Image (cartoon, rainbow, N blue to C red; front, side, top):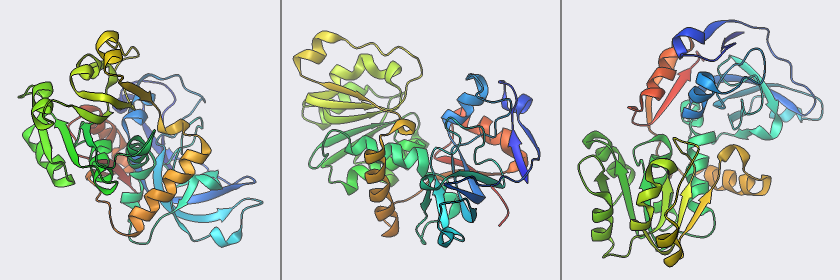
Amino acid sequence: MKAAWYEQNGSASEVLRVGTLADPVPSAGEVCIKVFASGVNPSDVKSRAGRPLIAPRITPHSDGAGVIVSVGAGVADTRIGERVWIWNGQWKRSGGTAAEFMTLPTEQAVTLPKNTTFEEGACLGIPALTALRAMTIDGSVLGQTVLVSGGAGAVGAYAIQFARLLGAACIIATVSSAEKAKTAAEMGADHVINYRAENVADRVKQITDGRGAHRIIEVDGAANAEMLPSLIARGGLCVIYGSGKSQVPFDFGPMIQIGAAARFFIVYELPRAERTVTIAALNAFLSHGMVRHTIAARYQLDDIAKAHEAVESGKLLGNAVVVFDA
């Protein structure tokens, strides 16, 4: 099969290789999937750039979509031919979705709704699941004001939509450019703040009559923690799913005075029960055509290095996807 891999950390152009590897064979409890689309996420490029390798050779990417072509012992033959999307494809494993075929446990291959394309399916495992879990963790957003940091990003664009679907009364998004502001507004944000041109705290206070946001969905905890007390409502919740640095400092006094909470989570490590519920809700939204997808760029496998570089640039308005011929 044709696949991409790297055997050491480094820049995309230096370490990513494309060539031929042996076709995988599913073990007991596994399925083998013919991959038609592979999602490229920030965590994938960070792993390639500098995280310790868990095997001598890594085929990257955790998200993807395709068709089950064979099954291992203990998996029903009826799954063969099923369209699926993949979660945690390369998490704690050496073989990810940047290959024509891959094997993984059967529960990690989720039925892909008929009205969802393979390319869209390759955006679900990390961006969509992260956004939906961030919007449902520790209570409902019904009737609340929600602030989405990075509202034009892969997670942010989904988060805005899920906030609306789950009954948020007001959705505010922060972005870094006029172009990104347009995307966030198209996704359903009621108010969009360009943090490079406006004072975010002042605008949030203005929008909320001084109250602040009930729930904040935060993409970079380290960068924005200092501003949190001026953004969050009394008793509010900040859900942090990412950070540019390992340390996230909070100003204790203002946070305790308003009873604010910070909740951290990573989509890779969702408990089984929470993941099952979130996947079911996501597939229901998809089946009813209630979710829009923002695919910013498509690449052939031979251009995987360019895909990684595009994600690293931070300029994409949505998801990057590597596509395979049908």
